[in-house]
Length: 215
Image (tube, rainbow, N blue to C red; front, side, top):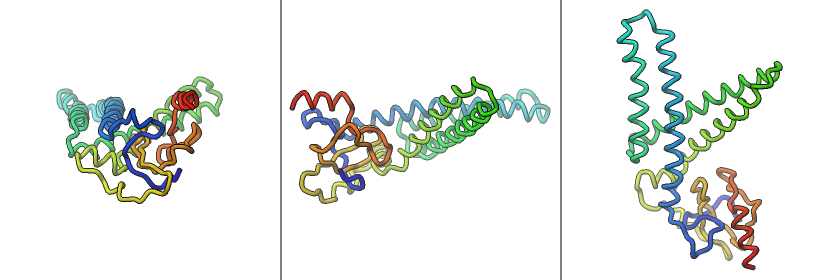
């Protein structure tokens, strides 16, 4: 497998008779990203609203403070709705929200690690959970910089990845996790091969076992 080349025709490890279109792969990744965006938006909105109510109380009427606290919720709701409907203007604002959530999770993870070092054993679980949330959000942000994902979101035509010349025995494939375009040698794939972009497995244990049974 050559990790720095490729196209986006079929997910690696899937038989030609079970080809999944690039658009269907994008739809699955987009749904997952929209779900993560909804959760991250809710967390950011709660944090900002609490910050406003805790620090600006006394600088205006209670009604004004409530209006200011609601503004992040309105903005977040509009961005999430636009992103879910693939509105072009929402693409990068959504990426910014997920990035802020990743930063927020990373700070909390570091804080819980410090508490664990100081002897608070219960903080270890929170550090693991928040670390996983940080990893997931960072991974979703990276999708926005992938030309295949961006082109599919904006409804643009196929990119010029297919202009690359394949070597003998290679075929075009797409990582089923992040849509990264790859050039692979199907007869050399195994369960240990990972996508060079998202580091997820290109072939699942289930597909590998099924292939071995058919041999």
